[in-house]
Length: 176
Image (tube, rainbow, N blue to C red):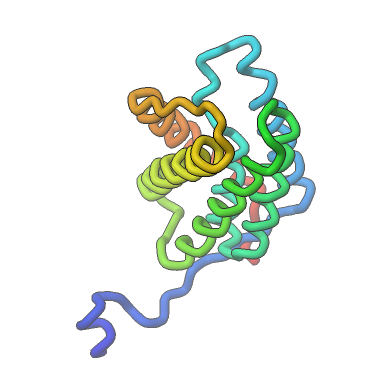
């Protein structure tokens, strides 16, 4: 009771954890990477969208297991690195951190509502770009443009697509 009065929360809160078929994670990851590398060739405005990041966020939110989130983030990030002209490991490191942070934070927040998912993707997209800029521009000396207006639009686009994508991916999960 004292815990509830001081912190305003119940000490025993049950958070749902979900499992996926391994094939579903591979298919979602493969499609995200394929679309991420193919669509900008024909639709340049799609470069704002980061589908692999959305898959990492979704798996981390649903599984709530930092180890799984780290592995999924690292594998998807390195696969994305192999499809770009940048240094291998840049996306891998950033998506690994995003997976860990997302999984750790999801233990304290109910991430089933669309509003929470929207806000979560907004925050994590900003963190993703900040880490990407820090590692790429500052540590590796790459030319990465800090476009505030473009990043704001990218945040909104990724959050909207993320909420819709998460609804689709919810059909492939089952309670653990």
